[in-house]
Length: 266
Image (cartoon, rainbow, N blue to C red):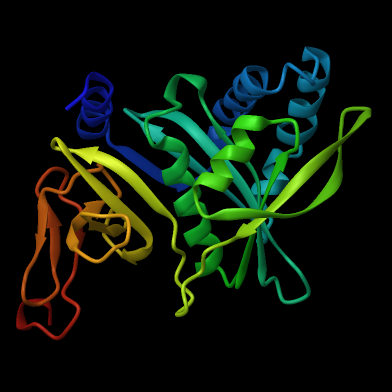
């Protein structure tokens, strides 16, 4: 295993993440992460004053109202009890059947350790569970890293729109899922190194767990050889499914209950 692969493996094993709904008490952390994230990725075309104005406008006094809105979703990622990132999404349309991921911000110190892609996956799942039948993602056209992030995880550009930030108008790229399978499953695949092995995690094939979903992992990107279940809570493949369909992660205790009748669960 290479040095950086080993570092990422240690980060996953010893610093498991929790993804949950945001609360009023998360407001300061969300503002701080949004500020640091924008300053890290956007200062080439947004000045600091514009960023400060935008943070106050989006996450200031109106934040409590945003959290209370039934069509708005804020998810936060916690690592070791500290907020490492958040997503802001919404349901739109007359029947609230389109999910829009407006912002996905990760603390610069946690970029590159799977925080962003896991937050993307869980946000998508939350929107679908809330009734969305289509997912759109938005990212400023000038943010090269953000555009590459969506392209690398199963989305393709479908259009553009104008967005106001401070007193200026910017162009946002609109992304939609590009590789839905024939059965409607999301085909986004993530290549990871776990326990010295390269695996391919299919985020479209998930099983609900008590702490986070389990995802199907394959030995190859073509998904012909199913290998293991990948725990979305701690990034471990040290788990197994029994004959009743129960899965338990030996690393963090995440569990999936039996998928058919079992006397022990009656």
